Image (tube, rainbow, N blue to C red; front, side, top):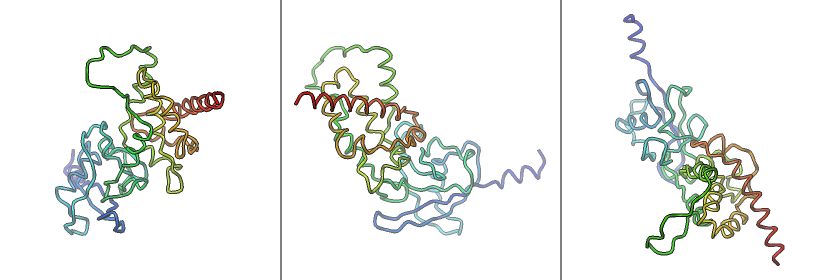
Amino acid sequence: MSDQTVTATEKRTVRFIIMRQDSPESEPYEEEFELEYRPNMTVNSSLMEIQRNPVNTKGEKVSPVCWEANCLEEVCGACSMVINGTPRQACSTLIDGLEQPIRIQPMNTFPVMRDMVVDRSRMFDALKRVKAWVPIDGTHDLGAGPRMPEVDRQWRYELSKCMTCGVCLQACPNVNDRSNFMGPFIVGQVDLFNSHPTGSMNKHERTDALLEEGGLQECGNSQNCVQACPKGIPLTTTIARMNREGTKHMFRKWLSR
C-alpha cells in the first residue's frame, strides 16, 4: 500500500446529522458531528464516541447525545431510532451499509423526551390492556407444563421474539395521532398467549380487547411492519390469523345471545 493510500484511509471520516431535542417541550434542531472512520462501526458505537467527546463540526462543545441502549446485541429493543429514514436498531446497524451523511432521528410516533429517548408507555399500556401474560395462581410447584405439538411450539417461538422495540409502530402508517391503533406488535402478543395451553383460558378476554377501539379493525394492511421488524416476526401472518379468530369469536358471541 502506498503512502498516499494510507493517508487517504487515515483521513476517511463519517458524517452524522443528528436530530436533537433538549426536553419534551422544546423544539427539535439538527446538529452535525464527524468521526474518524473505523472498520465495523455501528450507529450505537458512533453515538458512544460522540458522547465521550461531544464536539460538533463547528468545533463547539455541546451536551452529549442521549439515547437508550442496554444489551448491544439486538435483544432488548431499547436503541430503536430512525436511521436514514428507516426505523431500526442502532446496535446492529453497520456504518458501512449506510449512505452519508447519516441522519439520525427519534421515533416520532412516540413522545420525544430528549434526543433519541422516547416514551414507549403506549406499548406497555397495550400489553396490560390485552393481558399479555399467563396467569398463575400462587407460587407453589404446579409440576410440568402441558405438552404442545412441535409445530405450535415453533410458531409461538417466532412470536416470542418480540422485544417491544417500537419499530413496527414507527413503520405503520395507521399508528398516528388520528388513530388509536395499538400497533401490529400487540396482535402477535395476543396470538402468542392465546395459543399457550394455559394462557388460552383467558383467550376470550384478550380477543375481546383486540376487537375493541384501537384493535384489529384499525389495521390498514400496509405490511410495513413485517418488513421493518428487526426480529423477522411474521406479523402479517399473525394479523390474518387473529382476524380469522376474531371473526369466529364474534360469531360465537352472536349465536350465544
